[in-house]
Amino acid sequence: MAVNYFGVTEFLELLAPELAKSDAPRAAVVSSMASLQPNSPELVDAMLAGNEARALELGAALAEQGPRVGYLNYPSSKRALSRWVRRASVTGQWAGAGIPLNAVAPGTVLSAMTKELLATPEGRQMVDSSVPMPLNGHSEPVVIARLLAWLTSEENTHTTGQTIYTDGGADATLRGDDIWGGTGQSISA
Image 1 (spheres, rainbow, N blue to C red):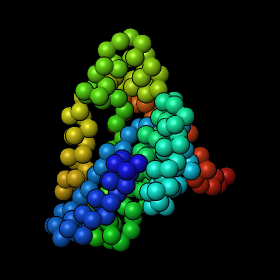
Image 2: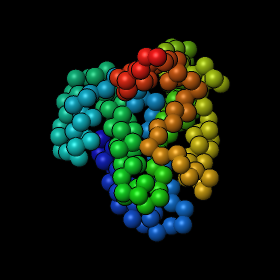
Image 3: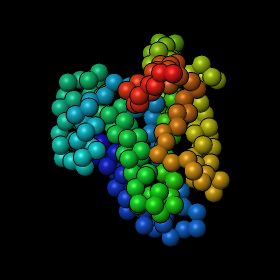
């Protein structure tokens, strides 16, 4: 929480006034497709409320319950970050200053962190069951970098508040059409 959420959001809050002085300011952060995984709503709420002490306390309590429950810290931090981006992006500090603010949410990226886990059939099966990526499998880091480059380029004039899942189809596979549930009213003809 201290790094994944508070470090990122506090940095951006301090950076926003400087960005506003630019001719073409943009900001993008890295969330994760883990933002869609099970999380601790209480922990997410503590982060969004800006209560770092409570968030760290809740996170420590989860970690004390072992790795399976302790893992909830990661998706909770990424869920909170994506929600913060959505909320902050439309405020005077961001949209009002002409600054698009977005997040990217990678699936499994081939990196030093995942290399060992993906080295065995068992590890790959575990990862792929949680993060199925039917389009081109696990991604190279450059794939994420390219999207970040576009989001922070002058070409991006209207995309804001979005968490863009760069996950080879994991979101579409796991949630299907269940992304609009409870967000609006249906009108019958």
